[in-house]
Amino acid sequence: MNKTEFDLVVVGGGPGGYVAAIRAAQLGLRTALVEANHLGGICLNWGCIPTKALLRASEINHLLHHLGDFGFAADNVRFDLQKVVKRSRQVAGQLSSGVGHLLKKNKIAVFDGFGALAGKDGSRRLLSVTKDGKPVATLSAKNVILATGARARVLPGLEPDGKLIWSYREAMVPTEMPKSLLVIGSGAIGIEFASFYRNMGAEVTVVEVLDRILPVEDEEISALAHKAFVKQGMTILTGAKLGPITRGADNVSLSVEAGGKTHAITVDRVISAVGIVGNVEKLGLEGTAVTVDRTHVKVDAQCFTGEPGVYAIGDLAGPPWLAHKASHEGVMCVEAIAGKHVHPIDPLNIPGCTYCRPQIASVGLTEARAKEAGRKVRVGRFPFIGNGKAIAMGEPEGLVKTVFDAETGELLGAHMIGAEVTEMIQGYVIARTSELTDAELKETVFPHPTISEAMHEAVLAAYDGALHI
Image 1 (spheres, one colour):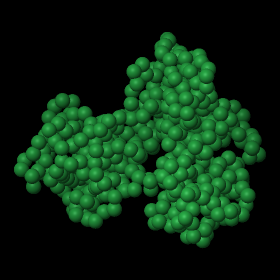
Image 2 (cartoon, rainbow, N blue to C red):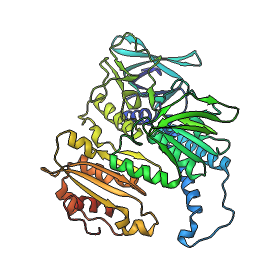
Image 3 (cartoon, rainbow, N blue to C red):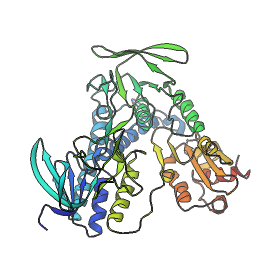
Image 4 (tube, one colour):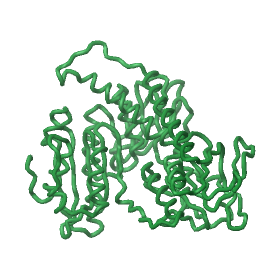
């Protein structure tokens, strides 16, 4: 093989693409990766990682303003926004550089440019790589994995302008803290930004067109989150209809119909967080058997597109739009290409996490979806107020909810709100992946004192056996 001939070319260097490339190299495949922007993709550079750095800063700001609860006092508590943002960017930069090191370590050829399918040479796929419209290379490979991700959806009238109306990118690098902010959309992205800016002192209004915030979560958890955010001082308008937006010199005005009332709102800045669209354009899909459905590439259980030698993973391949789903798909897809026996991913075993305050995490079916599927259920609930570690930490606000099949004892779903639940949900994910039932979970010993004990109690509660409530 020459330097442009490979067993596999991965197009896109996000959490799906770079992980797929590394696994391919581990399996002995001559591998190349094509990335047009930054290694690590949106997740590492403009999503998962830098937002968590910002949210950590906002948690610290919240704690500093509640030191009296722990017996401390401090005067003139303040923050330097530029340093907060700078640290977030440094964290992203450090990890992006780390991805580059991993690719080099695994002897993966990295091409800086935009990759697109460019026909065939016998049984091999050809890909063109361009940078700023100029050709960089033509690559040849037996197999291609498309991992180009997605971008923020833009609604008419809500086009980000970099000043008054922000996408996630502008929201992560503010030059000054807005006094007031409107967040349109209450999914994980919208709620995380709402939580960050509220904890940093901004007046925040969240608008959601559906009848509740965090609509993919269990209704009970969604209601508790709504209550917690309102208690923190957020204004939340659900079942909302937005009127025309007027952009002023340094503010935005609009009317919102919600709850039978019309609300006149004027804020410094607006964050639009109304979903994503797949990056399917200019990938050379024309004339192939690849099918695009609502901006996402359709794939089978092993991420095969239907076009020989072409696969798609991650956000490009549809929901759930989560980095860990993309990474797992990347590994599974590569192992299938390498001829290994793989298990298709069960979407119901993929955890979802929202890193607001309080945190939210879930896996499996909600109570409502389980009942809609015809299951007879047993539901267990355990509040954080009954957990010693949560009270000692000053985090008594929370709930763990379990949903079991009443006939078989199968854990159908688990839903949590409270401190550190994004770290705890994996226990239930392992239980579902291992097909554990209530019997094994009841017999599992949880360490004391930990917040995770609430997970055990929520299992016991489904069978009327909770001990501390």
